[in-house]
Each structure stands twice: as C-alpha cells, then as structure tokens.
Image (cartoon, rainbow, N blue to C red):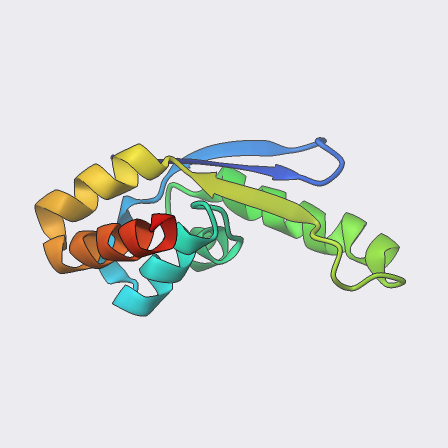
Amino acid sequence: MIHATCHTADEAKRAEFDATPWFAEADPSTIVLLAKRGWSAPWVADALESRAGYEALGELIRYARDRLEPESREDPSWPTFECRVDGAEATAWLDRNRSDIATEIRRLAAHAGA
C-alpha cells in the first residue's frame, strides 16, 4: 500500500487513501514528475476520486471545486487542495513492481545531487 493524504486549502476536509492503483496505471514520465515534485501533486487524487472506496476523496475534491474554486478566481494558480504521497512507500512499491521507473528516479536524484 502507498499511503497518500489530501487536504483542502482551508483545512476543512482531509482524506487519507491508497495511491497504489494510480502507480500501477500511470505512465512512467508522470510518476517521475511526481517524484521530482517531492511526491506532491493533485493529479493522483483526480485520477482516483470516482473509484469505489474513494468516496471521501471525491467529497474533498467536490468541496474544493464547489466551495473554494469560486473564491480563488482572482488567483487561478491558488491550489484549492493539496495531495502528498508517501515517497518511501512509493519508492519501495516501484522497486518491487516497476523497477525501471525506480531506477530512473534514483538516477535523476543522483544527478541532481551531483
């Protein structure tokens, strides 16, 4: 299981969920981009919100869209919700299930630190 959490910008809603299905289906470049962004991006939640078992996540996103988005019209870059994936769990899962992506993430991290 790859734990992930989301919360609305106003902290009114919070959801914890399993991001494993997203990692199983996402294309490699998107997973690498997520790692580069510090394992934080809204698209993981967007992809899972309508699935069975992810009702709390769907409720959080609907709240962010219906209540917070209208308030952010002056600054469209303002995020109405944030999601973070547990990077250690994601990396361990990638090692076991999609090792080519894990190798690429490590290569990029080593290059960035050099």
